[in-house]
Length: 89
Image 1: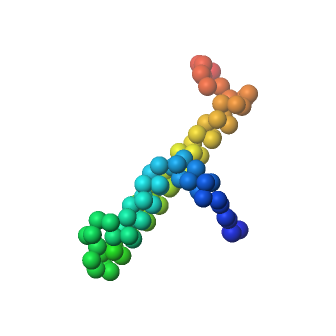
Image 2 (image 1 turned 45 degrees about the horizontal axis):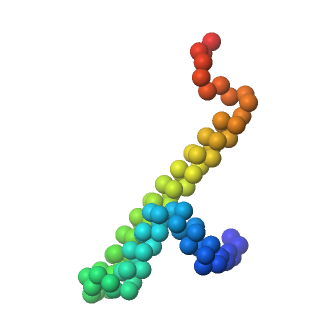
């Protein structure tokens, strides 16, 4: 995998395009910064991060699948040989 770099503006734009992932990252940062004050032990912090990463993975895969479905649907609708309606013979 090639090393990718993005400007801060580009990263913010991409995060804004995926609000579920942005919320998950904000939640992780909140835990790291100790904003809620509920993480006193390393074990608790570890379990919280594991759960956050697991959820972020699920949300990322859902976003990917949705994008793939939209992209495939657009490709099919632009095709000239595909019949979308009508009676099957």
